[in-house]
Amino acid sequence: MPRKLGQHFLRHSPSLKKITSALEIKNGDFIFEIGPGHGELSDFLISAGAKTSFFLLEKDKKLVSFLKNKYADSKNIEIIEGDALKTLPLLVEKHQLKINGGDYKVVGNIPYYLTGRLFRIISGLHPLPKLVVLTIQKEVAERICSKRGNFNLLSASILFFWDPQIILRLKRGDFNPPPEVDSAVILLKKSNTPPVISESTYFSFIRAAFKQPRKTLTNNLFSGLKIPKATTKKALADLNLSPLSRPENLDFSLLQKLIKLFS
Image (cartoon, rainbow, N blue to C red; front, side, top):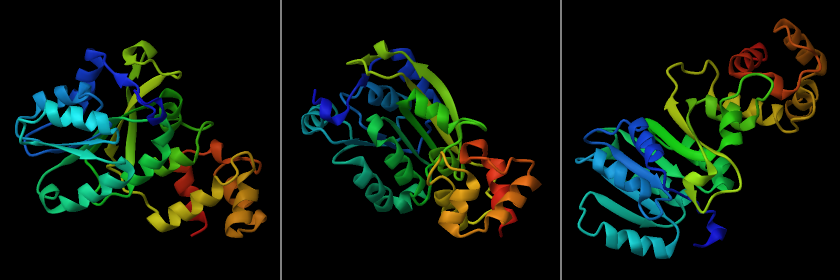
């Protein structure tokens, strides 16, 4: 197994069943699985959706050959060789008309070093998937779902589009080979509460606010958006926040309120 690809295969059957259940697979779904490996999760997904289209995105050439042989007789399964960061947007675009007639979902046990980049790719898909279920590093999952005091740029980015939830914590021994960090499965559902700020305004603001997380919001917003420090301090006071508040002291609700004060 080429360790350079960051592959750790989840083989714990109860966990694989729970991931499958979380996807709420039904007839007509399009399921995009990232990093299927030997088909450990794929087998559970396929058994849950007889009239579902499955796209298995795998970068490892040997595993691509293995999967094509394994699923050679399955007409509703397509094996795609390549980097999911590039192939996923292309596949969604290719099948867009069909997808608009039903639902599509993204699932995968991903190399952890790709987490941030993959979330950016998924959040930029049009249309957005109905559900996303990913196995990622536990620490990152907890940061994404964190409240005030542990907020970061990734949390802020994801919460604009999704309601995140940790649905499962995994043991290192659930994988082969075991990873050197703890893992968790995160579920993203499209938010039912549309943001009150435009996407462009929101992301311009958070890029400035979180550019240097250990600096105060006052300094970051002055440096990134040229907002006078006195203006920021007054806005923070209006929200009962200290003038020395850092980005991590926010949460999604406070962040939106703060942005509105500058609109």
